Length: 429
Image (cartoon, rainbow, N blue to C red; front, side, top):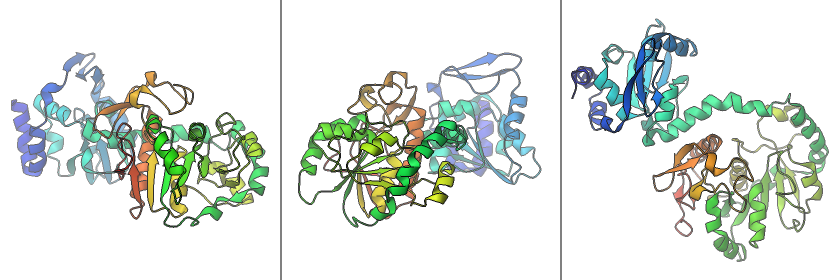
């Protein structure tokens, strides 16, 4: 081991002996690292620069300036220690939590550079990011280490990225948007006459509920769902809008279909033969879908400010929203009284290089071939996905964690591992 590592380790041994023992087991030799130079120098790992190669100190000051003057702050990723030093220069800082996102990378830095200045500061607490289920605020996440995060830190990485992108993503749903305003105005007459979704709450207390999404793994379950749906005393069957047509093509009629997206049209929710299914929607739905739907219609809101004015004029109950239709569908299952909720096709990924069940690759969004991100599947292996899917997964996991009284089950190991669920013994594949 290098002299630098042992010097750093001597500091850590006094403060975090158990953590140091864990760091010693990390395989820093597995990393492809090289020195890159500009006006200064930095480390490059697998083509990713850890910091600026021109002025690390100035970069760290800019990063530090993005954080509020709070007594407690969090840094995700250790980098080369520059951001830690910049933050520790604040006289009002009482505690700085440094969360390791890649153990092997941290060990490599300890081997190459003296880090004792910030490691020895009594205000610093060092821990592995993966040791906590949820992210801590306020934080700065080092961009390079969000890319280089190891498998153990994958879920924390996803939460960090989701939080970082939140304001940017929400811009599409501003109440000031002309298109959104026009759609709300067009749907308002339907909101005025349709049932309040609250009328469905507690109507199926204790009944088992299946919630069907459109991930590729759903194709493995069409036969089983057809058998279950045809039986007596069967579970309540709720599907998301894009799963409705694939289910109907396989002779499966869901009890309820949930839709929230203004881009869902009669192509996804055709009126023909819809009289046996209840439509639950939010007021961005396509008026043509509402006009043609032959079954019952129920309307609800999310907490989004987009609906604030309409909600005041026409009060209706709210359903949980987290960016995807899967969130209100699951929330509806809970609010209707479900205590055992089983998820089908909730993959949040592209197993088998497919995007959705029952649709052509790219029909409902980007093609699987352009995916550059990953999550861990039910086998602990990386599977391709896209950023928004990782964000939706985070929000579902948070929702599940907030409902400890409900038993949640997953039915596929090929999609993303969903924290808080167990695999259903009768359906898992």
